[in-house]
Image 1 (cartoon, rainbow, N blue to C red):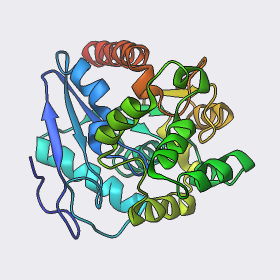
Image 2: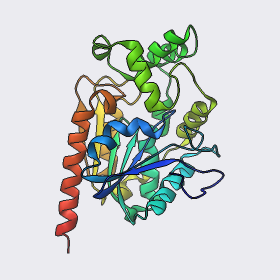
Image 3: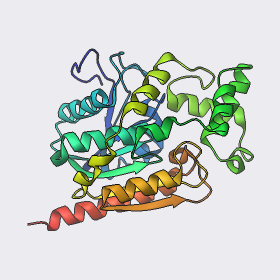
Image 4: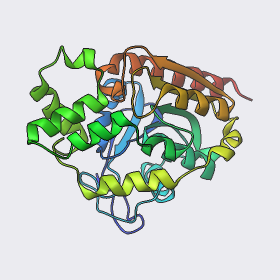
Length: 275
């Protein structure tokens, strides 16, 4: 369903399930359907909202900044009629979630920050591995570019067990694009994230229950970045998933869903017991 007009465009979102509200915020270059392994599994217990960022999937383009995308997320909460919600962000989505919480702390019941960072620049740093994989996503045949993208987000051990073409097609549906393509919005999002740094303010969020999850083999959001984020938040649990990489929400969906479910149940129990 389309959301009310926000900024310079309209946002596509999907609202499903019943129960405590949960807002899912996606990362760079991925459509909201990238959260389907979570929203499909959790909709029996929670009301979930996933959406396409401006310029991605079925949403209309608009100026790209972390602040603007956080405002989009808040507008979608308004559209859903939510006074507050649990907020989940992956990669850039985690950076957006932090900004949303800083802008509207009373509207955030909890933060679940997956494969993300305290400072946006950490997510756009250039290392030999990232440079090599990034180059391979832009040159060669379409099959070669898809394979490079898979290698960037999944652990090697997992890829050895999978049919690469089938996995690329499945991820293409989640991302809302062929993995061989790199639309201009990707670079706009990366630039916006690289400029964003609210790390000095994260202590302001210490009253919000937070869960930070990293992946052991993630070349983009190193576990050290997740640990730093948890320390800066001050009231966050931290976990690094062994053997996983950046797309942990896809190939370790059952584990992630279990962690999220137990975290939200605990937070909701605390809310019910509060005076």
